[in-house]
Image (cartoon, rainbow, N blue to C red):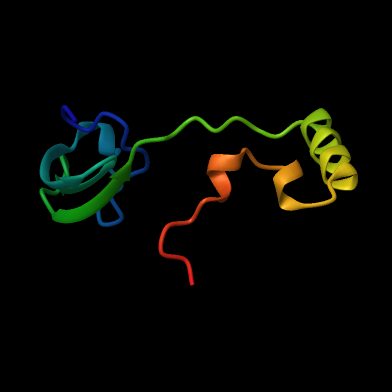
Length: 92
């Protein structure tokens, strides 16, 4: 993350917008980053967490109707799942 890219809002202490802040990445894990933010106005430091937005495909009414139809017609789990999906090793 370069600078304050992606940060919104303003400093609670002085009101300066965070797009003028100095940002340093302290740690990251997968899509989550711990940031050290220094306000460009009053130079106060605080930590922020930034999580990358992940696109989610929304369900449609058609998806739900199709799933409901499959469930209504199913007589056993093998009607819903492929044979390999039901093999659970070491299942007791």
